[in-house]
Length: 470
Image (spheres, helix red, strand yellow):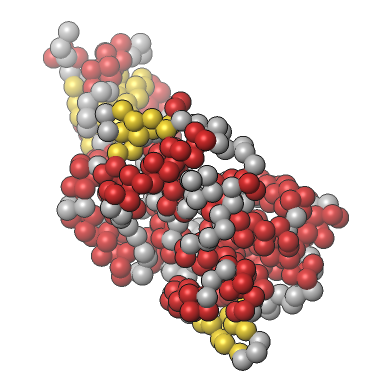
């Protein structure tokens, strides 16, 4: 009875268990905000489904559910299990995909495809209107013609690309489980982008991403892929691309066309401006925001509020975290992380409360798990920033006393790194040490004469080896 009845919640529960190795009923209820009765029914359905289709075995031990060997054989023929009754959340995904590709939908045709009444379809469209409103996009109804997307062409292009990225991250085109619960998405996509074409686009995306040494994570990789897909689709369907007025500071057009083949140029099409501008953005912009907010202002607020020392590496890490948080919450990607009791307490701290205020100020959506992660990250940064990098300057060329002192202090909680040098090397390479901002603490051994030297912004400690504990 359960063979063909997997729904979106069932797939999310399967993914939760696989990602976390195990799950309790209480954790699943909290994660998906459903009742215990509902979750028990879902688990019973999953248990039957994986066993009946020889996909795996769902086990229970100490009130925890897990899959045998923490894996499932998902390489099955999904076409025999596809759901005929598409639930609301999946209907909305399908309608949005059609809108973003075609710019319009025919209500009669869509209601027939989804096998739903016009009343149900109108309710779905109300939800879609609210979702699109977040991006200043509307729906325009034209009698006898259908529903059309209405908004700034560049905004429409960006949101279309990001929505396709969402589908890739949720594995709509790769997971057989997703193809069961929403076969229409895959069918529509394949009508316009063949499997062979998608493979070529994957190769081109990897080539460009690698050549320009972009290291911004998987979301940015899929954005690049989505841009190429929409370029290809519009060229193939003779759809005019939106006109983009961008003055590139660093035009990579020539470089792009030098490294790709003639066949790959056909994939890109005639309008490569958006692709080139995106690559330039990734390569040359210091902090690349994923959509509409000003990342520089967000970072400035975070560094000022928490009194962090300016550090480009840290700023880039925080920017990447914020981009991920923004995208996952703005485009409603599922989260499979449940806060532990310890993490729940993090939410009550001043750091967490301040992060939430900053995110609200900059209109960045978030959930508790995001804040708990940032709390841990920032606490680590603050703790590490208080640790000292110490250089020990030993008057003895063998550095025997200095090396012994290093062994005694290197594991202290207040110490980050310790280096030992001879006094000769310290003086001979004075410029190297004084200009290096890394070591803020100098420990001089048997060098009282150095008390007369001036080392600005350095903490100087003087030790007599006679008093050094043996």
